[in-house]
Length: 287
Image: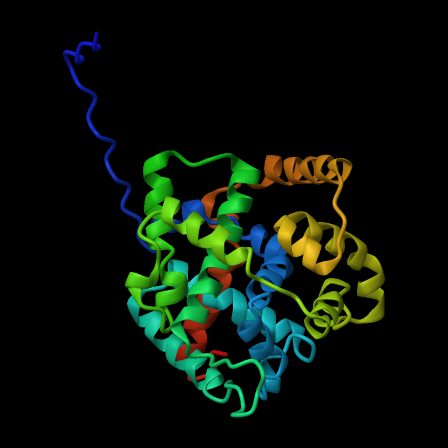
């Protein structure tokens, strides 16, 4: 026996159309600080991406030499990709392209890379989206299905703001997580990259007093937000007790952060977007 059809079928949920203005409601700027280093490790666990950064001749963009500048340019890219206008994206694309042009492997390199490779940019964009989605759910719980898919499709801008082709972005979240699981399992971290990551985690680029004050909590947070496969590659341990402690930390942060108005929750991304627009207006370097 089949169930009778309802007399008044429920309408399909109306898609939520996101724009650079409304996407702020989905942004938690604090996630950039909580998850930033873990996300860098995810991105650079793909050897061509990692060695592109490790061997880059562009010293001005190295976090080990210029940590505050690197923070600004990275968060500005996220702000422009998610909340910028088409003019903002075009201007920042050209600025980033100028920095990326020298970043390519030498002919005899064991690991080949090119900063303009759209497939590598797809992996980086996927890491950024995964990190935001993971922290959003940890802090606020799952989105409703319609806005979840709309935000996912909108997040293709994380790659298309550079050279990633729109059709490369998996068409929906189900396809995305198949891509993610398949590719994450292939990622490896060798000793040179592991040394680089440990210096980043332990904040070796910062003055000694800041290292002492913050490095232990930073390592705890990075370990918490890495997928288990990459914890294993890094030789990290994570226990059920660690997970409970981290959930308590996030619960405390979330209780305060999610009660803020959207404009404050989006900080500092919206601040960096404003900074980029001011730099552009006055002819200052964008990156």
